Length: 453
Image (tube, rainbow, N blue to C red; front, side, top):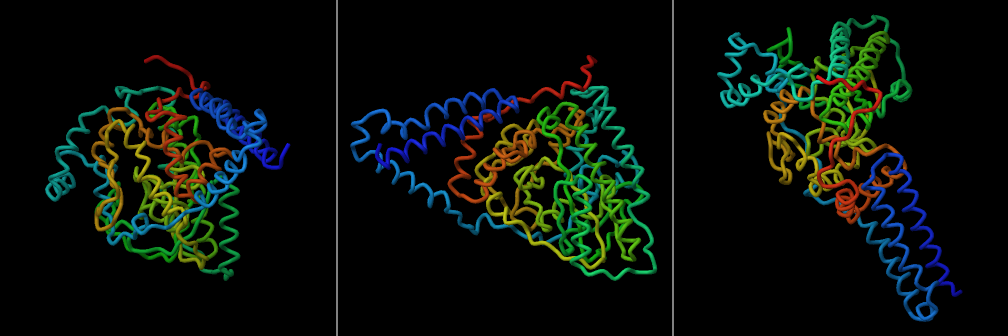
């Protein structure tokens, strides 16, 4: 056997092994369609490299060397990863108003002063908001996906989170501990990850990180004063099995639970920093003064994707975020190198827009929105679907190629997307092939009781 034939045989075995290993991972995930295509790839892709071994005439021709040369040419092609200007991350130029968010508008009581003042200033919101106010509502028994157990579990988490609001702020210890920024930063990151958080980053706070006016509860209409030097952002992973069933009840159950799971260490971290003698404030579900995804993006945790959510390197949008702002001296992180590749990948993908039940996610490339180049979802149609479904939907997260399980197979694909322009194109096609362009919603985890209503 000639050296070129031997090399081709080794490559055939390697390709077959990789395809089979991938198929086993997908079988564990119970993705029947993906397993089928893994088998097809395992049978077809090695064939060109096996021909010199199976047929002497082919082995004695220029074919083996030509095939190896062609294969070698693919390496520099896949290493091509330019940072094109049109996919560059953009910095917001203005602050947002929390009163304009859907959760703030949901709290407005028809006939109240705040209701009249808001819709006088924003008459364009009155008609769509009147539409979703007629729907059953989140976690409502009359909603489409009402499920007593998962809805009750979600409500229990939200009720528990509401009890944390008392602890988001507090007085600092007068006896300040002087700690080197590097040591304090290292301790905080290790401590937060020890508590089960997926990732943590720190950024220097900017005005655009803050809402300019509060819009929730008793703080409605209160101006927000940017007064903290640093923002600590961290993410917690949402269980894939719960999210892939979206928009069924397990999705909102998991979402609420992870708001709680990120909220507790946020409150705890803020209290810890105040105990050291530094001002600190937690920003958790229902109690925000900052736009968490923007803080997390600038802290290096990911990039804002087509669906308007933070896209992280390993879980994609399948995370929840909490933030702690503080004046403690800390070392900051830089914006993630994921930015260019994620913006480009989302430009090609569009899967979240295709499956969105409310047709709320744009299909077009990034446009100038609110003074910055970005994607902007239709918040009104999105929330209308939430109010109809009774859950916070999550279909966009469920089908996102970046949101597949955090394992070696999918992490390898995410690595390829991040580091290869060609692979970004190929990954979109392969995800559609393996999972379908419109993946169906999966069943909720079997241990959640099935109750007919």
